[in-house]
Image (cartoon, rainbow, N blue to C red; front, side):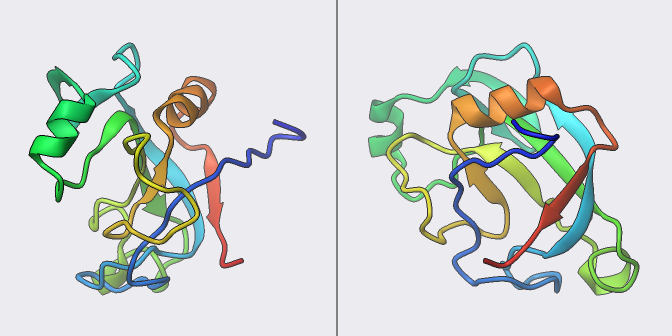
Length: 143
C-alpha cells in the first residue's frame, strides 16, 4: 500500500464491464464498501449467501464441484456512489450483490471469469478486508 492505494492481481467479469442488472458485467466507477463480511474466518472459508458455511475450500472440493463460483475468505460488498450509473434503478451495484471476494488459488488472475464480482486471491482479500472499514472508497476503472 502506498498513499492509500492498493494494487492486487484480480479477475473481473467474463461479460466485460457494465452496470445493468442481469448483465453479468463488472460495474465501473466510484463505489464504497457497504459491508465487510468474514473477518475472523479462515482464509479459505467458503461463503454462500454472504454467510460462512463453516467449511474450508480444498482442491478435492474444487474437483468435486468444478463449475461452482467459489466465494472465499472475505466479502467486501460494494455500493455504487454514482446515481443513475452504478446506484439506483437497474444499475445498482449493491442490489446486484457486487463484491470483492476471494477465489480459489487454482483460478487464474488477470483473466475475466467472474459473474460480475472482482475476484482476488484469498490472502489478498483477507489482507485488504483487515485494513478497510465500511465507507472506504473503491474505484473500478477499465485498464
